[in-house]
Length: 370
Image (cartoon, rainbow, N blue to C red; front, top):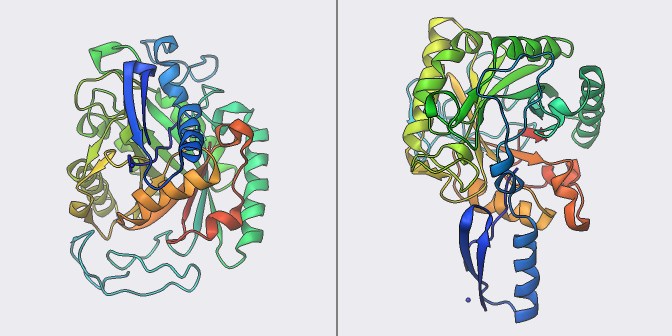
């Protein structure tokens, strides 16, 4: 669960003794003292739940069994080309009739999901009721709620078909070293197989989400290869828990560089080519500036469609601002947007409606509920 932050922009406030012993200063240019204080209150009240839970996370060091183990969260343009292109390359553009979104990158190959469909995903871990809607309810009830949400989105945009999805965290960051000292816990194949079985009931695609902790994508993706070879299985990577500086996950926000993303897309592109698969999807979580560095160096490949996913929670105004700052203003390819059933309603706030999300530009083509 994520903290939505305003960029430090000139009264100045300094927050000390935040979770993880952080100190943050904020300067609000052009605001009255009273208004600045209100904005600061929003920032403070939406401090990261995962950070607050850093010291209480009790995930077991061994891999859990799927049926009876409960885990807790860590602290909370079409270019007509056949070769890879960079995200900042000027591309030959076209406008899909269903979204009006002009997007960069190679022309979609046969079997590509985007932009012909909008993906709607339920996120979480089936072993935890605290990590998202995917594990909060029994499978049948969860899938019924997914059906209802799909109906809401289909009503809001009748012209774009919905592709159901389940987005499961299969490598979870830890607040303690865990086995191997990597600050991450790998889920068992049994758990992943259970998610695939649930997804099959709705012809849903599946995303396997990776929180590397002190590990790397190079260490974690090969273990998932047998699943990523399946045509309905795709990948998500969460920079929040990529602790390149050796910090404890949840104490501060991590980062991925374009180099990391390029490794992931090449890995999946090679799998797609070797196994004659339709294009893969990569979901990249983002809600701060430093979570993703050197975005202009991200390579776009015909075999992989990249979604830069706005993963912050808070009131609608803050969510829209985060989307504008870090998704719209640093474009890569497609865009995504997360809605938190619980965190977005804190402090007397509310969930954003499908129509509000659809009004964002570029229009999000991947929608995730947690």
